[in-house]
Length: 276
Image (tube, rainbow, N blue to C red; front, side, top):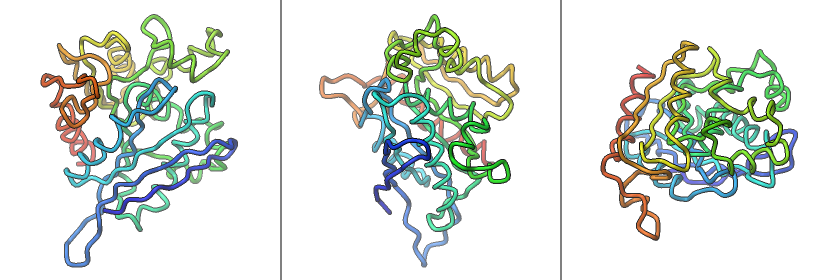
């Protein structure tokens, strides 16, 4: 495994992020085709970043023959769009390094949990926006360097209205969170468009922190926009489950929910269908 930490500095912001790679080694005596790569964005309400939604996810992808990298993006007091610019910079870096790293540039996926899911969904909706490309100094002729193959969203923050996780939007937006129009612009189900890549969603039905309606609203918006979407709404399961097994169990014992443990394998099956 190639395991390194890369500093991510996005144009237009002095804040620094970190990309930790979990790349499958390329051996001369082993036949190896370029593989997919997943950039993982942990959750934490844009206040902190959860270790329970980071390395163990990457290792699970590695076990399935998929490269992974964890983006430790900036949170409060940094505000929108700092984290979004950092994610875009990370995507462009993976494209740039794809040959060296053994990555298929047409198979770069993004994964986000909770607020990290909001970040990933935001990227899916906004990646072709002129302000994003201009901030990174990328013209339309180079926009393929920002292209991704799909989004994997684990119990994501989506809606800024009735079903909002208020803390996430306060941390992301600061005082702008009081402005109705500004909030609506970051309610991702309202921003879905035909340029959004395919989406995989899952949510626990007992989630009271980020209600399942967040995923339902996004799935409906994808359907209306013609964006391929797969949704798994489990009957059981609260928020922040991680892998839903002992590998990501919290110190207080929270996080084990056998009913939801299938999500990782379902996400992998979905990924293979997307790239087929």
